[in-house]
Length: 203
Image (cartoon, rainbow, N blue to C red; front, side):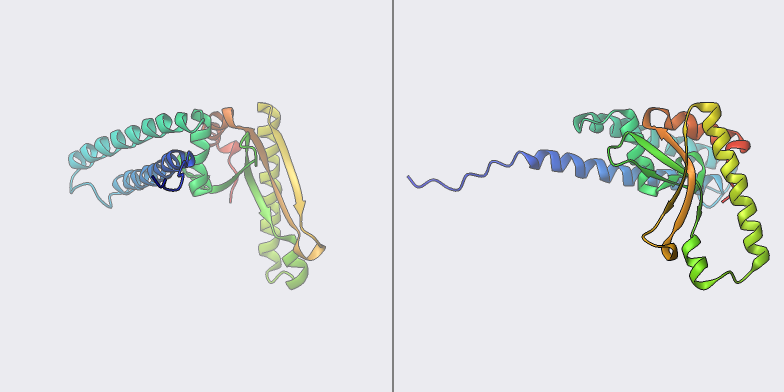
């Protein structure tokens, strides 16, 4: 009897799980946006009672989606901190904590997150100059204020402050400042920034 080709593909189930996980993250953010739309009165009914009832329902659905993400995450070898990071990185910011203006990036090994308090494209200014001197002075003053806030947050909470300049030449350099947060402390630090303006940059 002629045998067909051997088709052992162990990666398929894992691929399907990853696809489901990513799809659920999309659904999760869809529910987050629904909540914000209801809170801003863009949907959810014509009176407060209807909006509160809709808000409670969508919050419940969001919670279910989060629990499902934790469940599927375990199958992918992810703990709750890994799942949180993957939720946040979809938006590339602390939007989940009502701080959508604050960008983040994840370390290659997934062990920590950089929270940016300021980004200054110094190289572009060298090439094109500064069109508005007063605006540039204001930006630099805010940049240094944000740097002090990042240092204060780092010193008082045992975090690493960073002040990096990157670029292959002086004409493409970018200076970035912020703090590096271990993944297991991300929720704590993001909550602290949300609830305390002295740790929140103006961006």
